[in-house]
Amino acid sequence: MPYEVYLKKDEERRVIAGHPWVYANEVARIEGKDKNGTLATVRAFDGRYIGRGYINHASKILIRIFLRGDEEDGKALYKRRIHAANAYRKSLGFESAYRAVFAESDDLPALIVDKYGDYLSVQFLSLGVYLRRSLITDVLVEEFSPKGIYERSDVAVRKKEGLPESKGVLYGEVPEFVEIEENGLRMAVDLRNGQKTGYFLDQKENRFAIRRYARGEVLDCFSNSGGFSLNAALTAEKVTALDISPSALGMVARNAALNGLTNIEAVCGDAFDLLRAYRVQGRHFDLVILDPPAFCKSAAETEDALRGYLDINLLGMKLVREGGFLVSCSCSHYVSRPAFERMLTEAARRAGRRVTLAEMKTQSPDHPVLLSADETAYLKFYVLRVE
Picture (cartoon, rainbow, N blue to C red):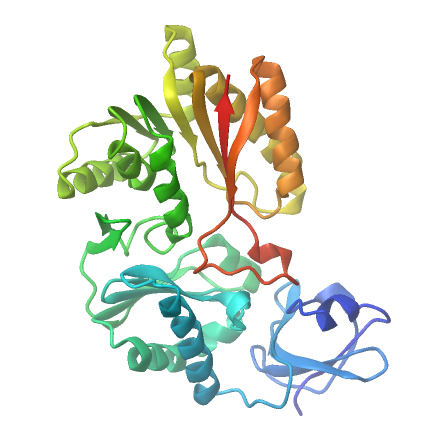
């Protein structure tokens, strides 16, 4: 008998409002008996039907709802939803590289599909979608006709689902590097070992936006494979790409060569240490870009993360020439926009600089935000003028 999950009294409000997650501690009782990863029905305390989703007793997120009506789970449903998600991106003009499926925002919780030219990179982040990876792969082949599909489920969040990390070819053949076009630039992407699914697609429009601010000397911290560096190099005299990973800087050099850019210098080292060293040396830049990895992976780490953001932004502001710009980013949804702005204000106070907001953006529209789920609104991008 399939699972019937009844929520505690008044716990249904958030879920009825559209949030897809049902936490284990919100459940009053569970009736029925079935296998982990199967479809479970969620009901309010009084028995009202709310929706259905895959259940996982090993996770704090017990159920991820994706059926609110009488639709049937199966290949036809995945085909409709993946096609709709991809059609939406294409209607916005995305072609070469984009996020084709963004999990909860596309009503396909825990499923990520990124398109890189003729190849797809996929993440199955919950037990339910992982058990259906063969079905989903078949749908992706039919929808995209890719040359290859690579799984990049090698992420720590899988452990919260009781799943091991997993990666490898799911379909066709996948080369070591895939070339895409972004903002008129040629970019080589490492689908097998690059960050996330190979590249940070969510910053596409923000990378283009910095061209109006990139003049003179630019310092790109946490440069990864050079997305910001290359865009800055088109309008600046010199760009210093700083990253702690030699392999990432190898990709910077590779991508610079692809585009004939010779004004990018790669520097390997810890950003915190190097920024302090530049301060001691008296170096200054016309634009400093801070795009660090997420400083916190849970709500409990938020305060420590904000201290880290304060430290790096204080260092960055001190290195900006008068009238120059600081670009500051955060990709952690646990750090709210108001908290991030308070941190920037405090960094400016401590740096003794007058700072004004020139531009504020978020993730690219191929990463749409589900308004009822704060977790889908994660990227913060600020351009600050520093005097």
